[in-house]
Length: 263
Image 1: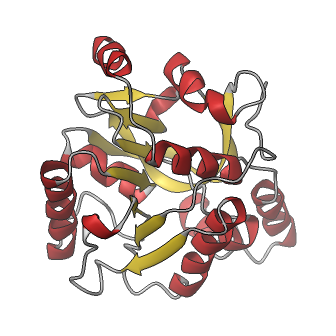
Image 2: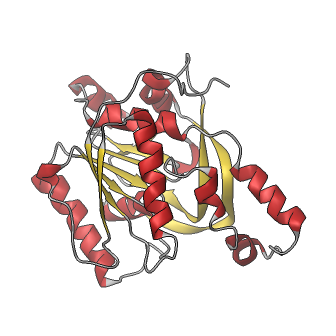
């Protein structure tokens, strides 16, 4: 299967706001640094500013940023915590008052944005951990074509989740199977179930979830070695970030919007 190209030219330098939605996470500094590492690897000139909705009621001014990323969390997106409601209000305000602003959701952000616009999130029968291949739809193959060697058929992403979007929201197009990657019909909201921002070192921080999710003994070296092997597989994170940053400054032609609405 043809993969994304990790050797193409640098991505544009952008001002990026990242919402880190984890509540009292002991790994927040490492998560923050994983964004810095993976994005600046393909766009050294990009400037990242971080916001913490679960801890502080502060949100970015969309006027000051080229891209807003709604990142992951350690909280069920179906909860009704006040800070989650504020995230919903913020996303709706951005789409209403800044309709051309690009929003990218990752993991919890993917699920939350789906819920905001009418999708459904459910518990998975079997959680996912480690690098996993996600098959692209025909729309996804076209979307990722600028970053591919030929035609990309799959995305390889670090996965760390036990919930998924079971029903995509109206007006959103599936770029991959199982609603793992979505884009709205106007081309302004792009979401991923997986983690382009995570490298293997960051993924390994949550190795103890193997015990909670799979009832496997993390004191067993064979269990840990197998999970680490999956997390150390090659992934398409850098190439995906390159495509995200390119998309953030693109204007979607009207004919593409019409095609998307007919899909």
